[in-house]
Image 1: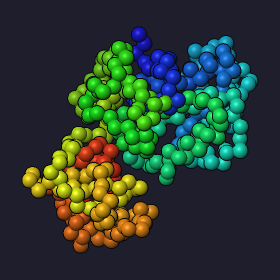
Image 2: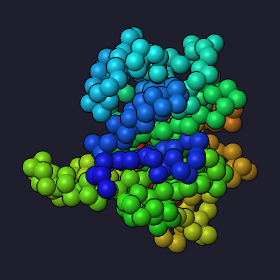
Image 3: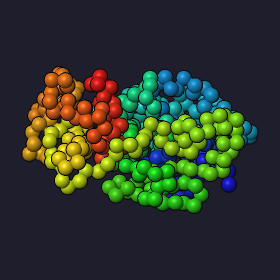
Image 4: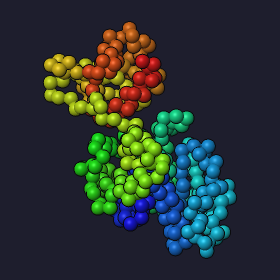
Length: 344
């Protein structure tokens, strides 16, 4: 078995949206390109390669560079944002951020979309506002009334991203995920989501790849570090299960907070003194604080000073003192973003 990713088995599950989380350098993009090229040569099916921003397409001229050696009898070329095989258009690269201007275009021969690096790390780039709806609009433009498969590719940076939140995907904390189907070849696949049966989640863990990476000098250099867990073991780099805990039946609902479109309930357990942040709320309680003008709606109170707000000061102090708990990884990661926004 190859030490690099092979998505042909993933295709046998026949899901429409396939989210592939794999080791850094594990061959996800390479396989996707090879799959797209082979399908065009054999069947004439075209493809779309998507990145989030136009600046990420600056290297489009080298799109075929890494795979061209596998196709010595074919001419692979790039002109503008169009990809050609033997002089015929085989695909197109596009930025999600500018995809709305493509609504009038027609893509009758496209049967696959490859969205590379759909999970981003904290840094220069940010997710688009309402990004999932942006992508769904793009999908509608391309697919029309046809089934077009999508492969979303990413490294294991964090499970908190707009797509998993939109489709209500919550991954367990352990590396060997028991709630996922073990395909027997080092990958863990959740074949169907309860509410979204055409969404497949795949966590790639190739033991041969891991052993080979550990033999390399760089692998030995970073051995035992958090970065090694991410780059080699395919553990989520930015995620930690610390302070994640489900609230109990004793908890009393206090109030809500809204941030970046998500509303969380703050719950208090008087017996153990812990506060819990949960997606559960009680509609009867009208106390709801918003942290940005975009989140400020009817029946919310826009926060101007946390220090002068007894409710919120208690919650933020609870985090600092270690008695605030989060019911999921998503809530914890979003809360960390809120901490930066609130300059706490």
